[in-house]
Image (tube, helix red, strand yellow):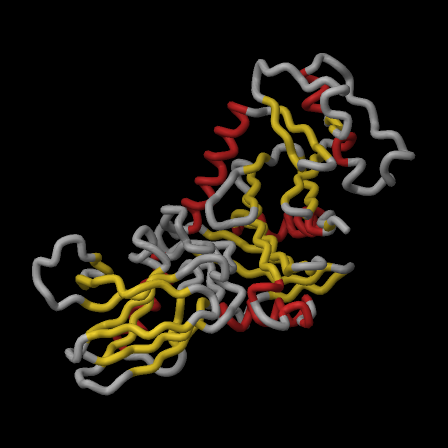
Length: 363
């Protein structure tokens, strides 16, 4: 036997989930073994962000795989070809930001030609994540970016069928009210500020919030102008009133309409030592470099920092466009991705920038 030590370097991408380390299994007929890209494997263990572990493996030549989970192993996998021999091996790598392959783990240094081809195939199979870091875990089970967008749209429709009325609470964030459910009484929820939909459900006309209670900002005017404000983990985002929350595993939050998706990812500073010292511009550079998006159009205008880039779903051929914006709060970096059909990108850039400018944080 020999030892293989794998160090997972800290990174923003994929930061909230463990990756699984597996090795090619040469024993035929082993019950319950995992098959990754037609290769029978056995699990060695898991690695958290910034963790290092040593595993015992045989001396035969074998492929050492790193995957996010069993659901995404077909499009989010990496392997290193261990040579035959008894000498110990030490490897390192990290999850790299790439919405086309689920922010997969990538070994540092040179890899074999077969491993390079596997990376290309993973991108062609494509799936978008958070996230950063996490398409964190890439466990949505949705193959292809356009399918992920359709998944958001379908979730939105389901949400609307169950909970069409939205009520904002200063303490608890967005609250929902299902069809037929009696609206909360003011005495029972003194902090709630009902929007037009909630007022309509109660058979009343929505009144503007008193000026003394809240400054007349874009967010505070939302309900009066066909807009609504969503809140998650201390962040506020104002979108048009046709958006609904569409929970997608692996993201801090997600919102959508029938043709637009917004993905929110929070990456706490605690995940990477010294992260709080990075600027928003440096955070953007990390994302661009890690993703190989050297051709992305950088956005630096009126307080916004971000970049945009086209994406063609290799499975369906559907053209999409990402508008990614970066933010920094007291305890984290935030990535917001606005995804629209490629044909609509130019005409909607200003609208999306307007939504991006509404982002604010508690404290």
